Length: 206
Image 1 (cartoon, one colour):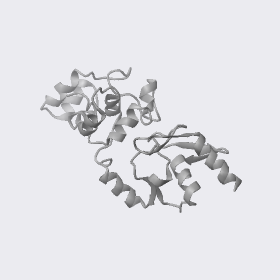
Image 2: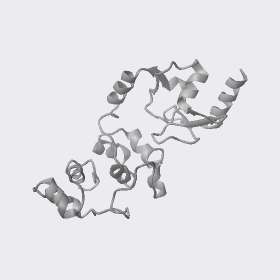
Image 3: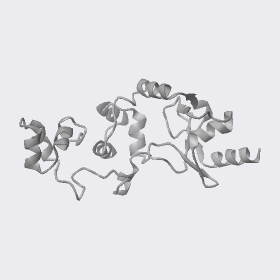
């Protein structure tokens, strides 16, 4: 019982209510995808999974804890439900989060995009929540520090290692030669040229 009380207090001290959505937002540390990170007694817990367990009991092995509110920072038990991996993927598709994966260039562009969040989300085929998380530093937070995160690095022209600039991108996309020939001229890989033409890199450049 004492452990349960300790967990409850730990969660309460690191949570604030959000009146518009009804979410209880985690204000402690975050993981890269926007999920709250709880550290108790040297052990790591996902904050939302911990909140579910405090309220409802243990989560069976291999079972996902999903968000009805589509906000990974939320730890309100009423906004959570359990499901399988298939349920998780179906939920992502239903909420528009499986349609497109954001790469580093796109995340950096979103961070500096001054349009309304909903408009940005439509442009990239992602949810408004994803846009908010990027701008609030809950995901892709290394851009706010001007550095790197894991094995990812800033790939735009602001990177010291960049071989391309924003001015090169329209020319590459309109170049009808083979990707191998274009890559040779610009000193980059064929894969980079294909990614630029497919807009999975430098997507913020029109």
